[in-house]
Amino acid sequence: MARLFIFLNIFFVLVATTTSLTEHNPKPKPRPKQKPHAFVLTVFKDTQTGIYYTNVTVGKPSLVVNLAVDVRGSALWFQCDELGYNSTTYTPILCGSNGCEQTKDQCLTCMGTYGPSCRNDTCHAYLQTQMTYNTVLASLVKDDVVLSYTSPSTRLPLACMSASEVVAGLPYGTQGILGLGNSSTSFVKAMVSSYKIPFKVALCLPSKPGNDSGAVYIGGRPYRLRPNRKDVSGLLVSTPLVSIPETRERGEDNYYIDVKSIQVNGKKLSFNHDLLTFNKTSHWGGTKISNIIPYTLLETSIYKALAKAFVGKAQKRKAIYPFTDCFSYKSFGGKSLLEKEVPVISLVLGGGAKWDIYGPNSLVKVKKTVLCLAFVDAGDGPRIPIEIGGYQMEDNLVEFDLDASKFSFSSSLLRHNTSCSGL
Image (cartoon, rainbow, N blue to C red; front, top):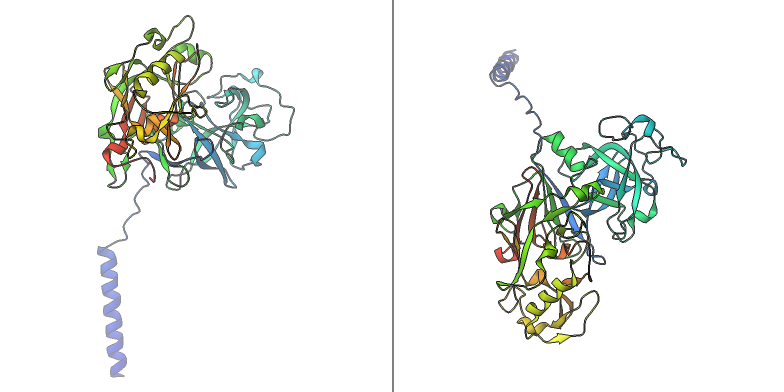
């Protein structure tokens, strides 16, 4: 009996203590979910094409879609029919609704199989495929999209295409384009509106193919890179983006910058600099940024001036397509392409900024002992005399600030003991 009395006393003391602790230490309220300040997508370089790609997850049931990254692309689009896309969470963007330029009576009639890419009430857009320059009709829908494993599901506009030719020239297994341009069909614009993030897109393209990933940033800095995970945004130098309404009227969604001149080791190249100015009458001229092409394209006279100044006394080797000028590896020191033996190419830009292009972005190794000048002669009279390609942007951080209408760049990150490979 005494033992039972002692047990009951201990039990009541424990209950009283627990009750007191609960009253004075209530369970913490769950914190409200914070909206992300920026989004980061993993990007890889395809070995065969040199094109950069990523993947996103769309709809329910979840569909993982591989997409080539195109900074000038006007939408997030993919081959819906080919992939069997029939999400239970998609909704069509209807003719006459917000986000559609077509009225209800302007809706097109679809004669194919009913589905996301074929509905009579759905808004359509004509999108240009960046590799073949074909203009293809796409159906506009909205669905839940997960951009990366760390980002929340977001309701975004998508473009559904059924034509098989839209993926011509893209890496094997790629089913569409992640377009980062600023257009009425832009998914980036939708994210900026939904999350109230800065209208900024940045690329850190990897130089190594395979699993050494780079990144696409949506929403701005910080840009933390290995090995120390320090924010490298302090390295950025800026120049204004050039607005060319004539190109938008043709349905093009491109980013232009104002290249005033080109230098090699500080010496200005001699060519007709009128080529660099956009002509509003002929719609020719200017400098366009396009990561979807592997190497920078130069009008013939500009290319020849660059090659003449760059080559110097280098030992020439037989040209290897698509390059015109190739050399012995030993001509440039035979060790690191960052050494002083490799000339520095500088794009002198509007506002006085200089985009310096060092050896790893100006030379490409095509054989064990052979390097080629990593620029392509685009011939006489191309509409765009300078089109900056992906190779010249590798291991450079580049940022498109659409709020401030400016383009920022770091030049080679390798000079700062970091890179865009293996992020």
